[in-house]
Structure formats: C-alpha cells, structure tokens
Amino acid sequence: MDLQPHRFPASATPVADLLDTIRRKRTKDIDWRRGRAFCLIYHPGDEREHAIKQVFDQYYADNALNPTATPSLAELESEAVSMCADLFHADADACGNITTGGTESILLAVKTARDWAGKNKPHIKRAHAVVPESVHPAFMKAFQIMEVDYTAVKVGGDYRADVAAMERAIRPETILLVGSAPSYPFGVIDPIADIAALAQQRGLLCHVDACIGGFMLPFLSDIGYDVPAFDFRVAGVTSLSADIHKYGYSPKGASVILYRSHDLRRHQFSLYTKWAGGIYASPTITGTRAGGNIAGAWAALRTIGREGYVEMAKATMAATEQLKQAAADIPELKLMGRPDMSIVTVQSDQIDVYMLADELNKKGWHFERQQLPPSLHFTVNYIHRDIMPEFIADLKSCIATVRDQRLAQLGNKLQTSVVKGLSKILPDGAIARLQKNSTPDINNENKAAMYGMMGALSGTDDLEQIVLDFLDTIYTAKPE
Ligand SMILES: Cc1ncc(COP(=O)(O)O)c(C=O)c1O
Image: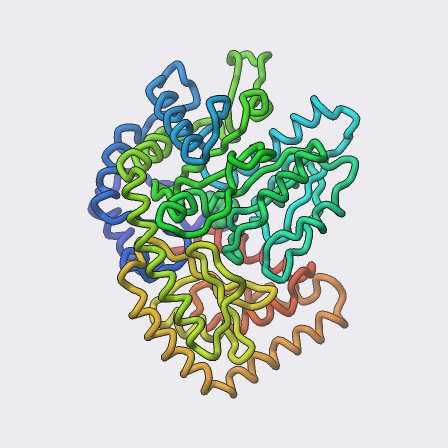
C-alpha cells in the first residue's frame, strides 16, 4: 500500500518553521498586496485592515451556532444585517443573516423560495426558476442542491437580462425570477425594476444578486453616477444578497442575505426537533458558524462607514475610468457592454486575448480569462488606485508582443482546430481520456493553448471530464 505523501505530525513544529514554509509556498501566489491582481481580493488599505483584524481576533475561536452561548455574536450579526437593510432601503420588517459568502446567500435564497412555494403553492411538485444566463454559477449549484429546475435565458445585445424572454420562459411551476446588480461576467445591471414588476404581476418571488455590486452601487449614487434602483425601493424585490467580503472589504467569509419580510425568512431556517442531542436549529447552511467572520463583517461596516466607502468608491472609479479609456484607445481591444461600475471586460477580434493574458501573467498581473466569447475580466477595487498607469503601460507592451506572434498564434489555432475536429469524430469522453495525463497545469505560464482548447470543447462532456480531473489533481497532496 502506498503511503500518503504527508504523514500525520508526530510532534509540534515551531511556529517560525511554519511561517518559513508559508513564506516559501506563498511565492507561488498572486501578488495582490501590490495591486497586481484584478480578481478574488478586495483590500481596504493596511490601516483599515489592522482595525478590522483586531475585532476579528476577539472571536477567533468562537462559534455563532448557538446564540444563547454567544449572545454578543447574535447581536453583532443582527446589527450588521440591520445596517445592510438600511443601506438597501428596506423597511423595519426586513431581516436576514450573515453567511459565509455569495454562494451560501444564494443557496439560502433558493431554499427559501422553494420552501415558500411548498407552503403557498402546494400544487407545484418541482419548482422552477427563470434566470438570465449571465447569473453567477452559484445559482446553478443552488438549483442542483435544492432540486429546483431552471431556465437560463439569453441576455440582450447589451448583455443585460432580456425581460421579455424571461417572461416567455415562465411556466406554471415557476416560483422565482433573478436579476444581477451587476452580473459578474459583464459588470452590467439587469433591468431589476422590470424583472421585479413581472414577478409581482405573476405572484413570484424576485431575488436580486447584488453580491458583487451591493457595496459599490449605493456609494456610486452618492458621487453622482446614474445608478438605477436595484434594491428594496423596487416593489416586487423579495430578497437580495450582497457580499461584505467583496466591496464591503471585510475578511473573507461574509455576505448578507436579506428578505423583505420575516414571514419569508422563516423558510430559510433548518430545524430538527427529534434529535437525542437536543433541539437543533440552524439559521444558515453551515452548522458551526465562524464568529470571527461575523465580527469582522460588523467591524468593516463600522470602521469604514459611508464616508470611507464613498472615498474608496471614488478612488476605485478613477482607476476604472483609466482602464476603460485605455480599452477605448487601444485599437486591438474592445470593451464588452457598458460597465455600470468597476468591472471591466475586454475582447478582441484582432489578437488572441488568451495570449495577451499569458504575456501579462509573465509580468506578474492576474485577472480572469472568460469564454463565450474569449475575453479578459478585470475587477478593479481600492487597491488599484495608484497602479493603473503601470498596468496600462504593460498592457500596451504586451499587445505589441502578441501582435508579433503570428506564428505561435497559428500553432494555437491549429491545436484548437485539431481538438475541434477530433471532438466531432471521437466518442464522448475520448478527448478527456486522451488528456488524462496532461491535466491543465495552472502554474504553467503558457495557458493560451489550454484555454483555446477548452473553448473548442465548451459545453461538452469532454471538457467536464478534463475539469473534474483538474479539481481532483489540484486537491490531492503532493510530496514536498
Ligand atoms: C454576482 C455574483 N454572485 C455570486 C457570487 C458568488 O460569491 P462567493 O464566491 O462569495 O460565493 C459572485 C462571486 O464573484 C458574484 O460576482
């Protein structure tokens, strides 16, 4: 029998050694502290981070599951929820909870909708939701776990939800409509007022996913941007999710799920009253609830405050405008849609954007590569306030490099077309089996060919097998 590559520690390792190991390992990570990552991380500056951490540390070991054991955490959570309900213009009947992130908030919104329908529309055997295809995949995860059917409707030419198409997708079993403020891939706000009006007309629930925009859009209104109402001001909006760990700048592991009424939230809770271990009541998906995350979210809202968020939104938008201007000025790039806040996506019909991404990665910049169509996605936040001129200079020089790489591009195209051709003639799963020993390597600098190939396989069983292999490999320990 082969042994595990890492044996269970027989004795204590001094913390200095552990920190050494971490320092070594972290050299592989994205360098976000210097503003070189346009994804995953939101940073409010060192001073604010220090303040939030001090509060976080007070609850390092605490569990918010039992509110009678740590009533202080239940208070911090309810206060944070109330502050958010106020930000999103909800009245006194609104309520909600702090969750671990956007995905948990969305899982809960879908569970609530399903169980609300179970009580109020008992004739529906299996519930159905209508979403624009641009919604975050957290919804697809939620629909799968909660056993709710869904229809994902094509977005319009402006990448916003097509409400007429959503209306056509409504069935007798439909219980929920969803809109994003804004959507992750394109950074544009769906027509929330129209979606919510449609939901109200048809007696459906309407969830607004403001996970990424919730802590930017209100402050953009304050500094003169034209932001359409997307929150509880809109009659018909019944729930809303907003991530405090994104533009709320709290430590990771904090989002808020809000409902228009207490009646609706009752369907979110899970109870089991026949357990030998006692009456088990849990407000969210997880059992144990990390106290630090909740306290950290409360601390971020309190220590930053509206003035701080407005200041950060201003600096973020100044950096965003520089990036948008660069995308408009560089002939090879094209902005996708008209971003409503600080999420910018560019595509090109002249250069291979995945090759451009490889070149920028070599210079230490990180961001997301998107597909359908191939595009590059930049989430700009406060940490980028001074870095844009350096990034734009590198962007221009990398474009010059890939413009000259016709030969390599041809090689990449050739590989993509070979895969395309093969995938037509080989049986399902065959490409994945061919790929089995060459699972995509995230540390490989040249990912353009890999992304080109994945694009060619988009939506196929082969691509799913490749991605499953990838996950299986990356979450398996390797020897030091
Ligand atoms: C619009 C939107 N919804 C939901 C999520 C999921 O959030 P999380 O990754 O915190 O689970 C994201 C994440 O980027 C998002 O942008």
